Length: 140
Image (cartoon, rainbow, N blue to C red; front, side, top):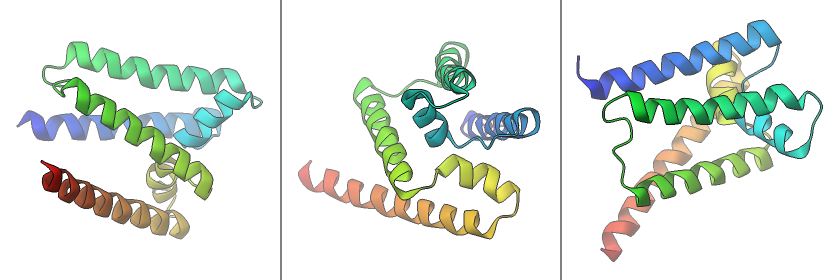
């Protein structure tokens, strides 16, 4: 099987497993925007939130070291993805939702609200990517 298929499937499976473990073992939904906001703001139960975020970051560094080709992006691309991720997180907090909370946990619970939210997130992301590509090609 091609690595371009294995890596995303493996990553998705790990995200699902982590979300399921947090839900089953901790009774919490794995909405990363909410978890990170709680860790930063000093919300109650801050320790597990910090551990969750640190685990996400460490997993990325470990994957970059262990999996061939997992970190082939040039530094400029990495920076753009980091900024885009932070902007998405801020936007979802302002909007009162979270892509991982709705997209992974909410759909897993067959929530209609989460299905609609995920469709909106995906459509907005697709339009943004298309728009960014058009702008980048226009200025190149």
